[in-house]
Image (spheres, rainbow, N blue to C red):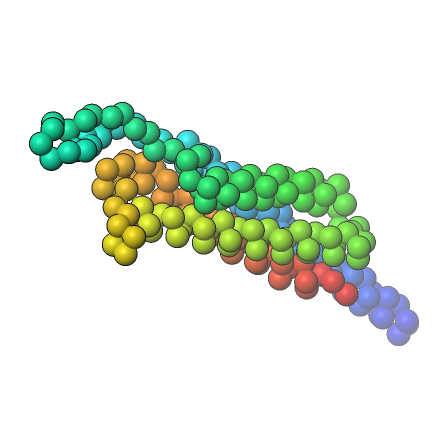
Length: 190
């Protein structure tokens, strides 16, 4: 009789454990989908930011200004290209990790968990470095640099700056989501 009570209790504990595992897996899947959306949006927003404008340049004070058509694109700045690339890599990795999560259905080995954990850590590092690089150049464009006599670019290409700026918080938010995924992955390791 006492033995049956223990079996019944073990069955209830197993059921509770399955529910916790399922909810944790649901949280992980939700966070990975969020990371996928954020990285895709950040890469797209920065990648399509472009503005063409006619800029007057005065070469010699006695001559009239020379009008030149110039274009501002993210591909002209290596830090922005790096940020776009990092977001694209993170987006691709996230799609693969979602597929692994769906295929494994909770039967992931310790090796697979470790690979996913390391992948998530790499994404955290890449996304934070991409955010830092793009932010530094963005601030330079916004404020200029008096010491080296670089003028404010956003004063001329304001539309470009306003279109490119949202990619930075999106990338930062994606990095934070990956940090939480690292914590979730670490909790799963025995």
